[in-house]
Image 1 (cartoon, rainbow, N blue to C red):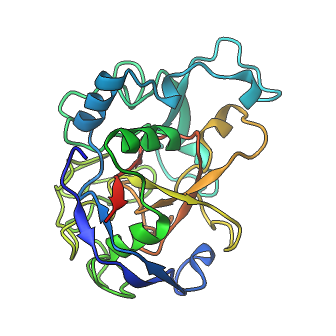
Image 2 (tube, rainbow, N blue to C red):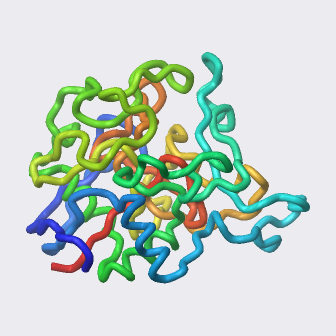
Image 3 (cartoon, helix red, strand yellow):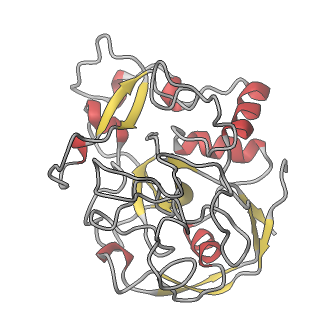
Length: 295
């Protein structure tokens, strides 16, 4: 293991919420064994060390496979991923394509595509990583990805049933890196940060864990099922490669935590109970991960 992890004692955890979105219902009690979890998301510095040591090539950097895009015209289409782009003004919030665009050449090394880079972002969470990328890093580091139940137990920080990781007061821009302003066109920034912020730039929760709320959504190992309702709005695009015609639905995993793009008037998902589906091959500018391990 290449970093210190925080021990969470586990026990019976109440997951979900009856107050917000259908996919969070019903509240269920789950038994969680003691486990270890990283105090912050994996950073660009850490992921760069992994890539240098292993030669790993992420999903967004690999050539597109026509088999993954039946019926789509891939001629001349380069590898890439989705990049958030603010709109000039108010738009129909039912259409995520208004603010997400497929960007050839976008990857963890160039999060916004050609011309972007990681200068000054060493301690920011790595983004533009798929489920496979996150799992590969976790295995290399001697750990794994947390389950949804583990993640939610850790995120609550000991506050059973609280709306937010810190209690009941909404985020005022000082508690977590979430959208401040009118989505998706005006963001004044949480503590001045627009986009990702360095890990640890906002207060930890009751377990001493940073960025369990906001900054980036985080992959879990749990598969998304239709046991609960489908999401009522698209905080995460749900399938980044759908932007170029990805064909049939692919396996999805549960994302947790919300991101710097979470805005109450669109989707109030910077809460421990909130959840979102994402296809395993997706990578975006607001999606990262942290590692866990058995205790």
